[in-house]
Length: 322
Image (cartoon, rainbow, N blue to C red):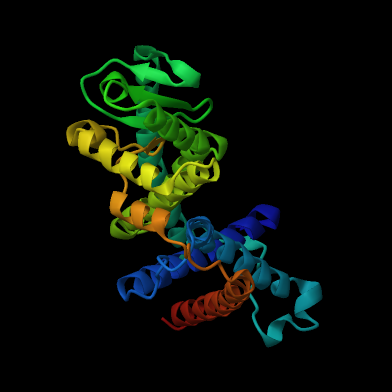
């Protein structure tokens, strides 16, 4: 039996994990029922919505845990807590109870998933270091990779760089080079490689098909935002679209597939058709209704708190009578 502050934290953690699992299941169900649709949102709003979605299990878990543990404290419970939720013995945690088994199993699974994602990030970091060592300084801060394959991308976390292969550089005009460079510099300015890596780590806790879809949607939204940054520099939309198509046509699929890593933002790889339609469209989409989203998160946290308390009492009663 663990008591005191550590026992309190373990009980709080068990509620966080229980709520997070429930939210992940709810998001997965909504995804498979096609209730989640980001296409009507602008690129910036899509990124915000995706960040909220992948953070929501832990945000709602922390809020629901705070609600349960606050209302279970002696001072609050005697006044109002027992009327809503009440977690018996909040400062006592038994390792050989269902709480202990549940926390141990969930923590083990979370560590395994996080470790797998971390290993991939480390491997991609090694790949990027190799690319940096193989490259040479080019014009306007761009690094040149001497290879027969055509590609352009931004890579790196601490000090990201814009890379263009010599094969691509030999086949594009000065204006096309300027467009590609501005696009990649927009990624660097927004720290997109770092964001993509962190987002990838957060999606690790979702089912694989859902995680893949979220990462692809985030990558497309980041590319669309970078395209918009080029437009803001007074470049013609039609010329930008032609440059996208040209790079996509020249790009060698085997090369780009090999470097599909969390820390790399490719120029001519992710959903070119969607990017061109978005680029040429005057209607960029809706904004995220933040007030409604925050209200929904608050309500879901309350329901998770009530649900965690109900499950807690149901299991305790069933074990007591068994």
